[in-house]
Length: 418
Image (cartoon, rainbow, N blue to C red; front, top):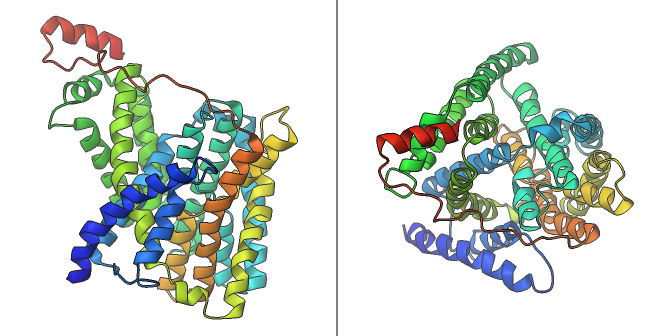
């Protein structure tokens, strides 16, 4: 109980210290906040100080954080980028990464463990990259859209592979079950794209600054429904969370820009201000440092996997760069494409839980993924160069009038929403 009590204070404290440390160090070098969250989690966890122990309560919040991380990744998808040249090349590059990752996995641990290693090595942490791209003003650039395409394929592809190859069903049954999920998800996406959303937008706008907060509540409903469907079908829950993000993006796409940006700000506050930091902190707390340093072989695997990520995932990802890109842009894209963590944590967790993957190899993979989050985005943005832009505030509070609407104003709002 003492450790649990300490966690109630230490987790919020660490969540505050992580961005402060990132801002302080940012004067000299740009390091993602997630790196500090992971490091602080390891320090206060059982591996070092032992101030916070894994618990069911924090684990539930961490699971919500992981789901929200993938929700935000799905919500950031640029469909134009995926449909274009970069998307096609990103998809082809991911297939190459998967095949190469399976080959490396077979060399490291022949047999079924190779599948876990291969899927982990073919992943990209889009959720970790999106804040970096947003802060650098790159989301709307052709290069930023290429990174989004690489990251989307690098997260959605492994989720499909997990559902097909790492479940308890045979491949044929798993394919049918996955097909059922795809049909349901596609139907929901079709309805979200076709149906009129004016009433939802008005409801969201009317509760934007009240205790109702319908935008956030609807987001949790969509995430909960699709995650529950994934779990019920015995698929990976992250598949449902990712599709939920895509669905919410379609629901809000025709909303007036001030409303859409205000809602995005609220959802991001819940995700990146609360739930996602808990996930990364808890990942550090539960990280098995002793297993990683238990043998010279395991220690050697960490830098090996780090380099393999760059070769297996980074090089194929670099070919998704926009036409006419310089070598620096391609190199930067490859470095960001080789950034991995959430999928690696999920895949290794499944492998260790069912006894297929030994804890040492799993810890080495997670350790290499942590280092990739630390090194590759920093190196990639340094290679790309500082192209950050000064943007206007996300929304103008004066524009958002959420006073009770008259009959005439509601008609006007409905026309604007449409």
